[in-house]
Image (cartoon, rainbow, N blue to C red; front, side, top):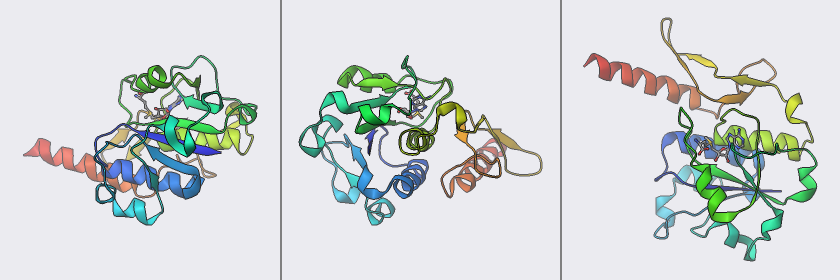
Length: 205
Ligand code: SAM
């Protein structure tokens, strides 16, 4: 099973680096490809932390990797698809494509660009927006572990408390771990807290 992220953000923010790091660790470097990087991209534009983990990347569009993909075997994970991803889709598809897009609230349909460009079959992972790493984690559970979507435990819009008085609500759906805590990339909690404190400091200036 191969996971493809069509990189649609400009450059690599810390948030994106943490998400991609987690994804490489969970699906394995040989099963992940980052596609559609800008034509002028060279290795020095890719964060060293991701290169060190063996990230595979290309300026090619996803349809052109591995000698050209058979479009019938490719699935786009699409929040606006009408069909839900099912365990039986493991037989239908070899490649799963995700938008390398930071979430926005309310949701802006940037995955629509991929839908229109490639015309792959689309599948939804429920009605709520997930981060890219959560969407890949959920797909992996359904396709590789054969767990039905309705049997996966999620937490919607968790509140992240970053000090005694303040917290922030994450506008996404997350899978929970065995302790009922949302699974976030390593380092993400600290980043969220840091960003929140930073914006409070800016307000106080
Ligand atoms: N506002 C964004 C959009 O353009 O739809 C949401 C992007 S989401 C943060 C990043 C990627 O995760 C999407 O492009 C999609 O591949 C996948 N994804 C997230 N939530 C999903 C859902 N509920 N169903 C299917 N795919 C989802």
